[in-house]
Image (cartoon, rainbow, N blue to C red; front, side, top):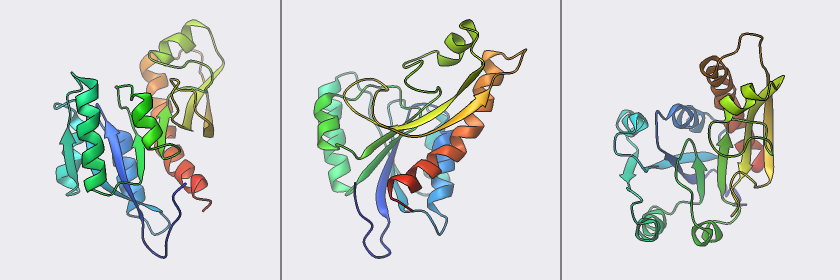
Length: 193
């Protein structure tokens, strides 16, 4: 992993596709004294992503790539990341799967947050699947990204109890609140802080 040098923070890009609530929590965390990261760039696969508003609010550079041609978009993305000297990528509700080639170039420097207790319920529609299987607990996981979907080394997890009348929406809300706390903790753990 990238080491902290003196007081310099790790130049970080956050990849989003939607509301950006985890992005907001990472930006707020990056402004605290104990944070090892500095959010320098927001990448979105969706030009209508509400999370892009945080780029304006917090004066952070943003780029939107449509990923219609994955290869071209990733080439462009790699050059943007190089220009901005990005050393860490945090995926936060990014709904595109990055290629093995891209992942290799950032090996061990891409983190993701997933709304289930991995290795259970990889992929999409996690809350629905958890409820359909009558699980007693769900939660969220921060993990390193590797070439297999939601299969990288787990950094931290937070368990959430499923209540009797839980719905997809109520469970999503409950877990999201925990995600906002877990992602910063996981980053601190990665950098042994």
